[in-house]
Amino acid sequence: MKKQLDDVNSEKGKVKEDARILLVSIAHTQGIIEQQLDEYNVQIAKLSAPYEQTIEKLRADLATDEKALLSLMKKNKGTLFSFEDVVNLPNGSLIHNVGDHVTIPKTALADCQAQGFRDAIKVVESLDRDAIEKWPDAKLVLIGAQRKKKEEFKYSLKK
Picture (cartoon, one colour):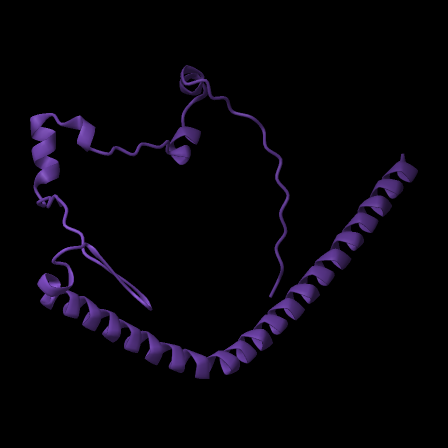
């Protein structure tokens, strides 16, 4: 009996030592990864800073040009689009389209509910897993669910 107990304690001690070594390795590797990511982020910030400023200015210029083009098209729609809806130019096309557009007031949802217009109302339903997991087994059976044992292994590292 004493030999069996010694064997179990010896085996348990070996397993604990193996686990300790793995935890040390994991912590060490995570530390290296975090260090590498920090260095990576510093280098990326150095490289991207001048480009970000240039791109920001270019985006502002682009927005100004797009706004100016739309304004030009609106002011001159009679001249540009008198006979055609698409004006082809060497660098692109100007397009004019007239169509119906529905404006929906903020009270429309309540009005649709009151009128019974269910086809226009989106309903998104989903199950609350946390609530269902708290149910007794008898209630779970009613919906075809069942409680099963789940084995889980985790670890935590000391800082």
